[in-house]
Length: 336
Image (cartoon, rainbow, N blue to C red; front, side):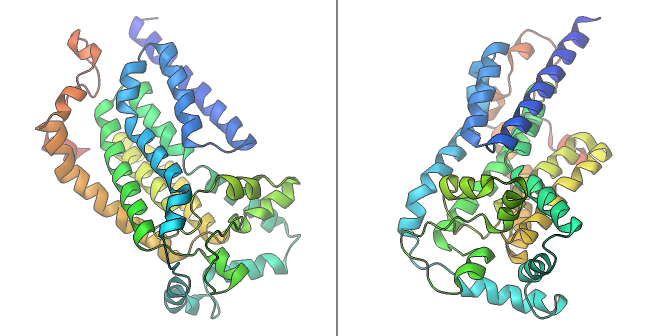
């Protein structure tokens, strides 16, 4: 076997082992960004490119630190939680299509009316699986760009809007903390107590009842940093960013991957975690950040600025042809 084919086979093998590992961990305890980062760092150490890993993956580390930082800070600084306004807007826009009630509560009534139906158990498990993948899938896709394909240009094109969406969403959570629909269902329109510690699992508890163990309830009670970060829905934004850049890299071959964002969006409503308006606003955030990144930020930093040095790989300095060793021109990125 030629040397380059052996190297590709090795990288694909590493990818498959990582996917299997994340699937196992996700089923056992749910994948957290810090856990995923440490796991990938160990792999990078074994592969001998830990230094580059720490440089390239630092945006994910910063996002994880900020996400953990929100655990107490947002709740302390938020002040008024917007409970009624999002509900009223959702009701005004969509209640006419669901018998006079919001889509979330229509689904809740359907589930309560058919507690033992086969379709309910199927959707409970399917939706909980989709919803739990919102962090693992973007990390795996980033690893595919970074290690499996050795396409650091596409890796940074993906990471930049991914980071922008996340930071803008964090800022929104500070400015406009909003209650998700599960809170309205459980507590009505009253303001939450300053130290509110509700579980926040929404209808994911249905999956817990099916498996006979309070998995999602425990995760959301002890590991969910901010229960009033509903607008926009990052659960809805991450899959869309991932699909956009999978399509940019793989073209029509990425079309089956569309089931991932579609499944997460449906799950967000079915599981009573987000209103439709949360999802629509997430789409708008993603559209703005992708356009801003692709047309201005990436060219300014990686084509004309100091980012060109970041994309100089060890292989390129040795003269080997490596995908993504140089930032593409504007025309090339438009074709992507």
